[in-house]
Amino acid sequence: MGRIQRFFASAVMVALLILFTGCTKRAQFYFNENVKLDTSTPITITTQDDATGTRAELQILLQKEGFQIYSPVAGKKTRTLDQESKFPEINSLRENKSYTQQEYVRYGSKNVLTLTYGFFMDDNHNYFYNSFFAEIANSETGAILMSAHYPDGRYRKSGLLKDLVRRMGRCAKQGLCNFNGKNP
Image (tube, rainbow, N blue to C red; front, side, top):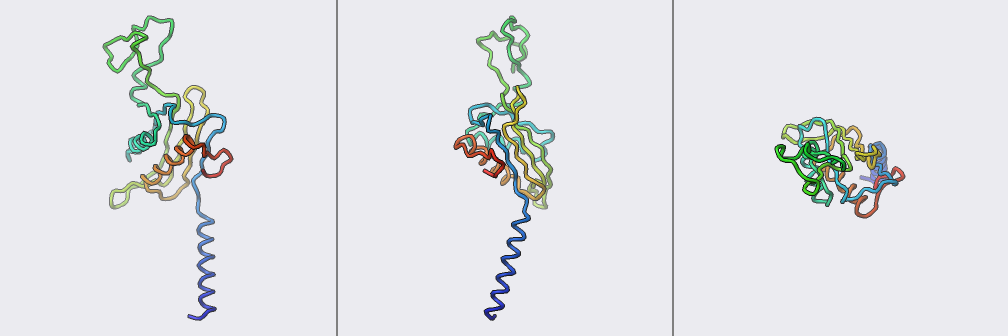
């Protein structure tokens, strides 16, 4: 192969690389700079249908990263106490027992992580997302702390969840958040 042919082949390869990387859709993240995401504020993970086991896998990854996760089941079984009441009607994990204010432990979290995704399974029974959206909102005010959108594509389930948790951890622990719309 002559020098001119190698140069031409290299130029074509570089052009193709630029073309494909320039057109690649990237995940978009938003972290609210007015509300700090941290590992100590409890999060409850919710999703509509979870045929892929996403909630369970994400919960474990977040717990390993140091986030405090509260169960949505426990949150539905209890409620906040009214300081004025006598507490006999409190719903608890043991429904036949009433708790005094001192015995009562509140389940339920301040932040809710809601997941929405489309998926498919390959011939080897591996799950892939073809779209994924996650949002953390304050359950009291509705303020959005984080939004994550992975555009239409093909994402391996475990890889995408690890990327999401890594980005959340970097924001909560190191303050490396994307307040201006750039990827953290």
